[in-house]
Image 1: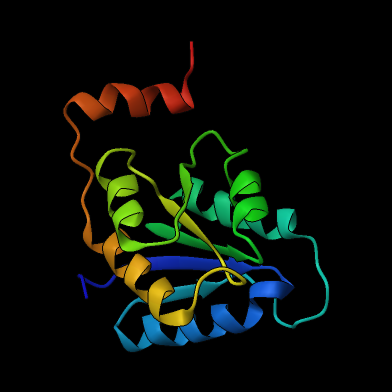
Image 2: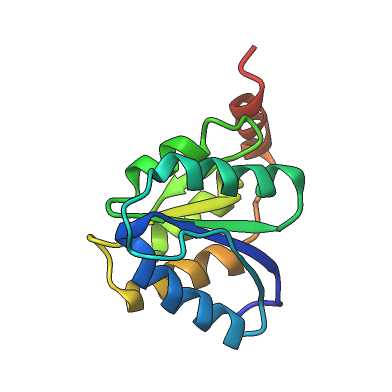
Length: 148
């Protein structure tokens, strides 16, 4: 895996088990991981965790974020409410690589009901190892945070 990073991870109740497995795997790989919850499988509202994750990524407290919910859709939508966040819903390593390379994504989202732990790990590896290509992509990425 890549150079150790500061990473935040957050999930709702549907992705609690996947989050716990991924957090342990990331720590074992040498990353510093901030677990932003949830801490149980009791029902919670995914926007609360998407907003919390977006905040620490936008502040620069962490370098990258991982957002998890049942489908990955709701938590990615909530994270993307923050104009400093570029959260991409991914389901395989190619989309995880391209969201970094072309879109400078700083958070990836995955659906625990749709992706298994091994595929989630492969996506995270691609996401963490890939650098933003810049160049022609920079102008487009700038428009994501400032559409005018």
